[in-house]
Length: 120
Image (spheres, helix red, strand yellow):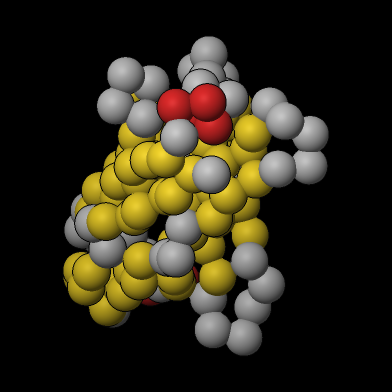
């Protein structure tokens, strides 16, 4: 089993920046089987959506709404994924969830979420 613990959320003014971190912990066997990791978000009354993802090899994928503003990175040695969020907008307000896929088919993990609030 793998536990994902997010940190770094909070309140920021529009145009500001935040950096989210997600640390994976658990059994070594499960940790080494982690493949893509990423961030999803869910705003009030909306569906959860993919924000950004990164493979173990470093390939990245971003939602169109955050391209050129957010950067995802990963430290495989620390089992940690980061999301640097710049030029934040009020519409970025949401609970941000860390997610990880396992190389074991059908297995994935979610963090409990961290709230990001962007004031106008």
